[in-house]
Image 1 (cartoon, helix red, strand yellow):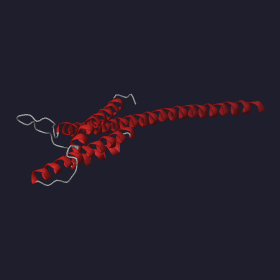
Image 2 (cartoon, one colour):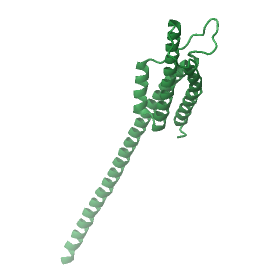
Image 3 (cartoon, helix red, strand yellow):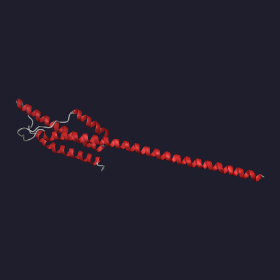
Image 4 (cartoon, helix red, strand yellow):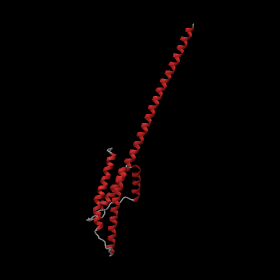
Length: 185
């Protein structure tokens, strides 16, 4: 008689343990599935964020190259040593608004090497602008019959020395952008 209740208790205990382990296995499976879904969601969110960032960088770099090409075209064609008949039109220098906008975008999304090369190109372009302004000032004084007592050819010499520097700075910047956009960085 004493053994009758032992088998009943044993069967009950095994049943409870079976139910517990079934529940535990199911919970572990649900937790694992939930973790996989969460990890996949995080991964997809990160991929989407990376894609948006890459698109912003590409847009910033394309706008940068457009501005640099426009500024370079001006620097290379302003004040030609030999004139043509009819004179060739000189492209416009990018507006201050364009320069500020692109500078802001490059500052926000550009890499440190691109930002540094862009600043180098801008420095050379400012020197070109200064040489052109000096040439214009000397021409104005010469037409007015006023002599400042300076070497009239110096700004022309400076401009001719700056043009290859501008071209080299532009090319270095374009190479860096190309490297970064093609994933070689």
